[in-house]
Length: 270
Image (tube, rainbow, N blue to C red):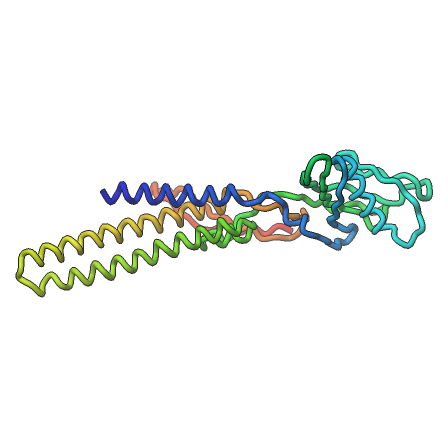
């Protein structure tokens, strides 16, 4: 019976985690405002409203270009085609070198759109862009071993808090059920009344079963947390490729005697 309860409880918790995650918005963090000053370029966010997506994109790009050439007195026209920003006018040469890294569109109503652009603009047209990537994938982190922490770092706040709450509830249930089991177990030797004795034994066994269910639930949530932390995507973020970084990943290797050796692999890239 307790196995059925354990399976049902775990399925409920896993379903709850997935439902909470599914309700989280997918709007990237950079749309709330971003500006990065790199060696050769700037990365910045801007947004505008238009009657269609194309008009809104052009308005956004124009605003960003105006920021970059402010004070030069140049008059330019801007058009967005895919990831390329075309600038015409100015001094009959290339005055701005820009590209779109990511875009996000909101439909506000009939015939009204808000478009967000994340744009990389070279500080000088002769400079090469840094190799950057906007991705929702995250490298493995030791935070995966702490329930909910990896999810919080990926921007899945509600999901992370749900995992933390579930793990805390199960662990608290283990402590409470074990305390009650020990209490009734200690009372068994205090009476010779068979009816009372049977009641103490039954209650001790019931709390032992409940404790085991809670332990199973805590283990299930913890395993799910690690799998989710490694496999799930998070909110989009910017990665400057080529930066020095340390990768930490678990590994398992077969031994000559047939057993398995496990550990942690550290890889430093520069």
